Amino acid sequence: QVLHSLLQIVFVGAGGPIGKEGAPRELGALFAGRVAVRFKLKSKDAYLLMASGAAAGLAAVYQVPLSSFFFAFEVLAVAISLRSLLVVLVSTYLATFVSNPIVTSNPNYHLHPLTNGLSFWSSLGLLVCLAILTAFFAGSFRRLNKLAGKWRRKDKSIFLTLPLTGVLVGATALLFPTILGNGSALAQSAFNGLPLRMALVLFVLKASLVLLSLVSGAYGGTLTPSFALGSLLGLIVCQIVAGFISIQGPELFMLAGAASFLAITMKAPLTAAGLVIGFTHSQPILLIPILFTVALTKLFESRIFYRN
Image 1: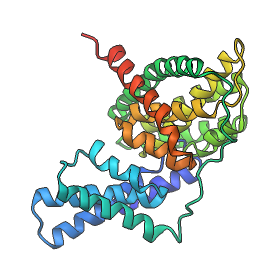
Image 2 (image 1 turned 135 degrees about the horizontal axis):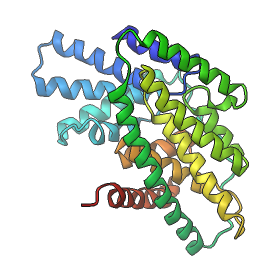
Image 3 (image 1 turned 30 degrees about the horizontal axis):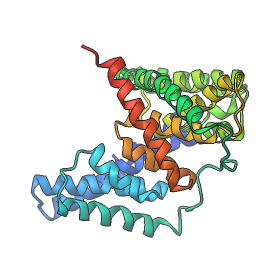
Image 4 (image 1 turned 90 degrees about the horizontal axis):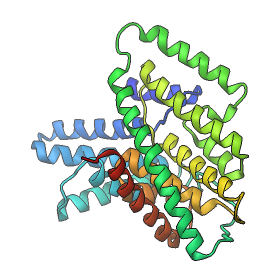
């Protein structure tokens, strides 16, 4: 299992287009599982410890203790009680503190100063449009991701499919180098500013290569790829609308798009909103429009994909 987790990091470091956040979560859960066995904990206590270990791994690598705290309850379904709240809280914040000298606490992404030339109601209308589009594309991506996991190569054919996918990714990167890796470079290039046509091409390429890598046999997460795709979607919406009305700075909409896309793919709205703020060190006041967009996206996604 340790080798499996380390190979995920190696694959992403070599240019694999999927996320690497699965590895620290797996290692944290694995270590906690060994502790639970050593002290002969009951299954309920062992699960709490392993969930805390997974959340602590995420917190340590990305320096996002609060988002990782939410992650344990939203994604790992830890039962809420005073005891579990304290265990997860101590685990995530202690892991962040211990890893801080090694892992930088600087922002993962650098944004231009947030300026918005739209009125409140125009901004609101654009966020609603963004929520509708994100609900469709993120919902589709999540369902395709589940299918990719179901169809993932697990036999000897992986020795053919995975290298061929790597060659395809490398060839594509000759023209579009930012698609390499987990999506950090792609997200930063989106925040730096991209033309509409390039943003559309990169969105399609990144989503396609992530799904193809998973089908080919790769293991990993979709956290950072989803963040990048959501950022691109927010930029695309702003680029389109800019042809009709004046917009100064799409950063708010890119953050809202990233959080909303993450909220759908992770099924964790609070975690997603916290990750976006934590990754960019944006002002907490931005949580208001971000959570508004996330809530709308969840609502629209349920209407689109879960209608009777």
